[in-house]
Length: 285
Image (tube, rainbow, N blue to C red; front, side, top):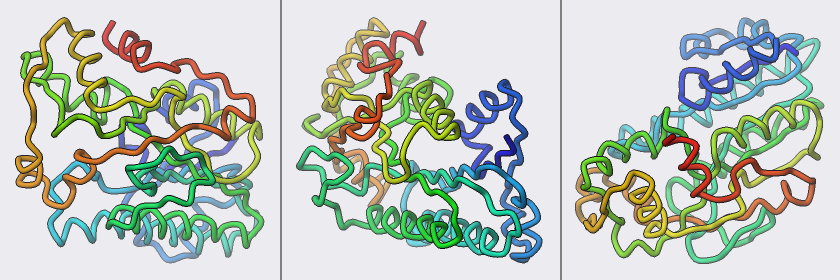
């Protein structure tokens, strides 16, 4: 297959490129400079492709200044709109668009399947709603759209685990606030496997929660990671410290969503790593 990937330089993108290349797919990477092309020039990049996988977006793990909040928004919504504009003028349009999203669209109180109406209304949730709306515009041009709402991706090569492991290895790890906030995760192996199966038309179009069946709390994550590293984790990270470090972005760490992969299970997907203990054991071996 000819597959276009945006955000290929991120840790998920790199893992995906390696996986799909090993299966002898033809990969076209979209970089930041490509978005300055005219719509006609951009369309040439995606013409005759079988699928587009849109992972582009600035990291949310930095301090949210007013300027950086705009970057979080534009790096997702404007780039996705550029993709849709290009699709609209392609003579042979991509068959599939897989668009990354996040479970941060949900509130941090209820348990959520893909039909949940209990949504959040903070800044990140607004970004996610606008991002999904932009992606769904591809339906108008006959492209099948899959929206993948990601939980915390477990991989030693990037994301949350890579950031916190050095701290935990020093015995300085600890829960965030009271530790009661929900922790929904997916191992990178399952994420890649789900994308591959989607490319092979294994699932109906629509929105999917890409999370493992097990829902934990931050305290439980902290305990399991510390045990996996044979370290203690008795410290507590106060909320005000995170607010100083990350500004409004601290909400991501202080809060958390309980999402369940209802549609994946309904459609017969078998997880490689259903439990965090299994995922950590693999990553830390």
